[in-house]
Length: 454
Image (cartoon, rainbow, N blue to C red; front, side, top):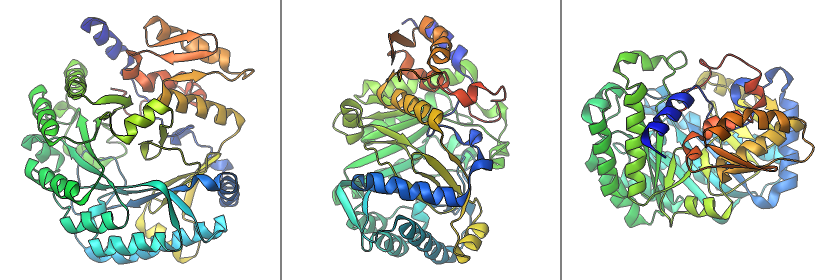
């Protein structure tokens, strides 16, 4: 497809759109119908139906020593490391509550991920206490996936060794951009030497997969700065790359007001950053495995994209499906397939709930039959690039009607009850999924709910 046609498509479809780590997306949860009792029941029921699959655990570690102004995550900025011990104590208490709900002492853990915040804010000794406490009395499934996010500037050999010895084999480095001016304005400082050191140590210890998080659309970014960042990244040779569009949501994250819209590349300028980065990544042999994600052909994520086992949840893309995801810690989201629940968003409220021996969930959604069918449609499109419409589903005709302009634009093809994304359409996955999103289609207010698609 010619560049001018691609540019027209990008301009047309660069609208506010969900990232679809769930359906329904969080702004459309029916919180008024959610309650803790129903959530407990759904967790217990899900586990009984799928216990042999193992469970996934996401742990949110919110603390950072400084505020990265681009960041949209739930964080608590402090240089006081005395916060580590009480937070770990609370996490282990919350974990015990879930084990009591599930009703089994010996659980199979298929996936464990530490996110943040900055997980490497915590000392290696405290991370050992946390993970060994979670694993006590449980077992890992065969080929379990343990991973963590790390700030290259503060990740030590001791961090890497401690977590490796506990079963962690995957590492995600938050880099975003190597340009000094960009790093200054987003208050995120790490050097190529920092990243190289961490990678060298991780490789020597035996880590099997290292991911780079890179972002386009950051303030002061230019074509040249993105080119340089990708060139450095290619020399460092990670196994996976996540190449995200910067989500400018200052109405949600006030820290983003350190810079203004005038500092951001927009329109054609931002589109050029996206096209350049994607082209350079793919020219170096990385394969597009889904929205924003690229992997080497030998990496488990790419293999999962070929054999149909690729999955997407609140942690992003995963190389396996586990029906039950338990989120521990401030603002974490749990997924029992037929229900979602999110924890309270402040450390103080989290401690209060835990000390009162209450699950710290504050909102959630109980999926009805319509939600479950649409959820599967969106998951299939995000992970496999095709959807087979369920016979007799009452919304199928509406969905097909919404797809007409996407068909005309060459983004999807429809053959009977099968909808398949095209190679061009892969760059517009979020837009394609919006055609299935019944709850989004019923609202006209989108701009202050989601970031731009590109």
